[in-house]
Image (cartoon, rainbow over the protein chains, first blue to last red):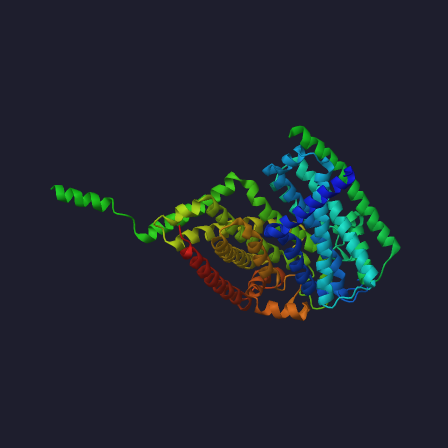
Length: 261
Length: 272
């Protein structure tokens, strides 16, 4: 068996384990599904009239506009939950046993990230299904929906890299859990929930430069108007930036973890 | 002579009346919760941080909603601050449930249950502590709201708002305690938090009733927390009236009676 095939099997096994772990523990699944769905319902019902505001982009409904934001929220929280579960594995000594096994170290991190990416895929399918059930149109049709799914899944992988890096560095589930409010801050300071032009300063200016805004717009565009090359490329660039950051941080943290044991 | 001395000693050593012992137990349990706050100040941070982030985030994101026709104030921070204060109360109440579940897992609740203290006294200690703790996030959020321009609600409006916050935290603590005693595990924490969050946000939290989507308007109309929110908000968006106050008091009394009885029922069913 080649080295690559063996690593692929390890990644698949660890990825499947992390997905099963999430679905078995309600405290890991609730932030990914329950909270974003609750907030989607509340924000759609509470701020639905905002589409009448001058300057609001033309949309079929506020639900259609909000779908991308909810996917982003779920994806970010999936990254955070993945980091928490990884830190729990470190605390319990499971990762140490993996380090001692004859498998490449990067496969351990990739396995966790594969699981987080699968949760991102689940989140995008979940919210697209909710949107369709409650009457939202996907203007970009099937290709648009596939693009949105692909971008959310890739974003989950990217954000999961940062979660995994923090878990490896600190080895503490409570520290990773403490990042939950930060996830909310990053979300609120992006165009996830409202058009950036209509936000209040200083949130408006911060949202303009927040990489998450580029990803959100890339996911939203195929839903509210159709596939747009500029928005898609900006989203891909933002995701790549986060992937690179996650890789650098993860490799440093992995070296640190191997050194300290 | 000896018999008289024994009688006198017995009189001086007679147990205190039940009501006094109950009050002392409640005070001790409340003090325990206060000690936890003093010894682990970091534990209070999430309860303070979450409503603050929601307040600043919602204000920055949805502030333009005041431009909609039918919005009762031009200051979104004034409109949204009571929501965040109640949200802080909800989080604090839910945290009381999580703490109770942790105490159960650690065996502390078992020791309380074998004590001669009545069950309602044990519950009251936990609930009153949550009620007092809820004033911390409420005051923090309110301070930030004033700093960024929220309007002064008047002394009467402020007092009513704080009363609503404290009573909401008590109701949320009953809800959290009920779930903690039912599931006997901290794993039920998301259910405690999601329940209080839903109850507080399925109200005219983001916009006045008339501007809500029809389905949410119907939900908000039957949600008792709508009356509580309207009572807490009245001073921030207008004048304080008895007509806006009493429905909030009645709604909270009903919630406390219902959730308190359910929590007590769970406590009575909990065997050592």
